[in-house]
Image 1 (tube, one colour):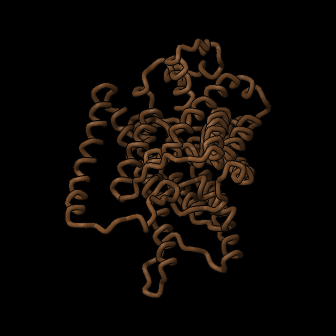
Image 2: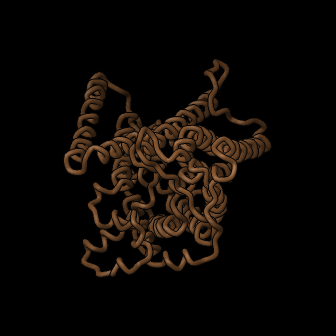
Image 3: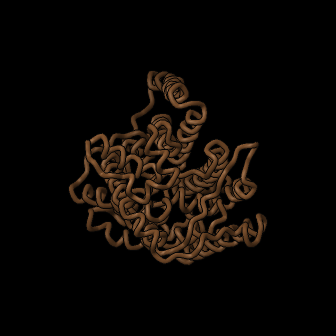
Length: 417
């Protein structure tokens, strides 16, 4: 059976018979029932907020998979093909999410619930971590959120990537104190200097400049810029209609992710994050294996949030519950759109790349204050300078990671799915 990036190609999809249609109709309520049971389980054992966070994670995973909202693939396509659809969709998402989230974070509460922004210092740790993360997501085949939703879509290699992601994050937590002692600038929030409106204008100007630049680069290569959204035209060929569908999905996906991140702020009290669950998973994994690491003496675990996550169960950890939801949501979406395919065969070189990439992802995200979600997305909507700096260095790391991809038998070509 031929597959592409973990999804069935059109040539492998069999004709739909009446029996298939009846099974398809049964599949939707069955999936909803299973997801509802999962939410109910978390509600019973971890409470209402955690159940809501699992539901949000399921929605996020479904949107990521359905829209193929990939950071690693989108950045690679921009570099290799000058296809800017993914990057432009990300810029639209960031501007919309900033409008929704930044005023709420600046206010400090929403509907009586305290909220806090993700504002971090810009320094050696952030730049190094982002650069390593950029390399890792190209040779691992996905970023933090990408590994989760690709695993839900059937790519079993990502389970191994999870393991080294958690190992790299645990290793970085051992070195965290040293990295935090390196040179850095004080955290800078735009709202502290130019107010909420000024911060929105700054984010809009930066995102707009990136949108314009990548559009110019695409037009210089192809003579035109593929629209993010356009009405169906009878004059469009199959390739044009395929591009229109991808662009529309990306745009709608970006809008949905912005809205879901706003809801995450309301429920969790801070923007969406993915990678800070992996040090916890690595630490708990070491405990389950009977390893004595004296984590209480590591600077990373002296942080109140990390200390609470380590002391509690996985269902009590905000990010862990949402990550589980992303996997479940991607699985449900893959089954619903008939793109689910188990991909378990992987070459030795690709496997080595996945394991090494996972290490770089975990280490880079931990010393760099997060991944493309927590550091980039979360930082930008928090009005923090570090979000944009993280993007710059992660994009540079992506360039180096692409040079390394052939070593691990990975194509340099971008893919639509």
